[in-house]
Length: 147
Image (cartoon, rainbow, N blue to C red; front, side):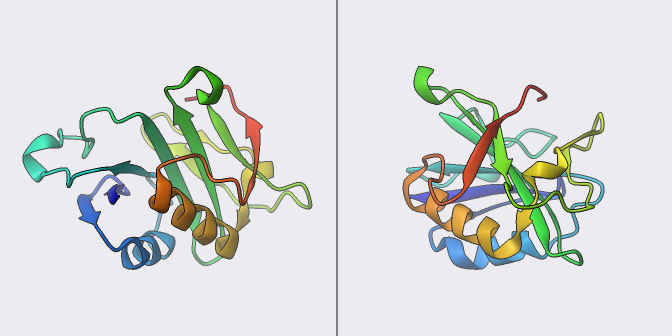
């Protein structure tokens, strides 16, 4: 599986070994734009990416925003299967941290505060996603009606 990422709308990267790319994503400033992640069988080449750093549509999309200084991040999942379409966002059942995390820097729209999880949980969810391309089961999810 190949992890492909549009990083804060600035560059597009692909990695067969996802750990280093995930670490880069977790410590990238997302205050003005979100990142989008895709898992595919092959690398997505730069010529396949449009002017917004987006590739052709895969069977899912993960939107990521992190605040490295606060130590929190959030994930939005959109799938194409009937049983897993979404959209869903991560759910923090213990707290609602005072962080603003963008779901769409162009509008702007934000994740609900209940979606913010510690970066260690976000890391684990991204590693699971990178390993199988499915919505991670290691975190809780809630429905979310904003794209």
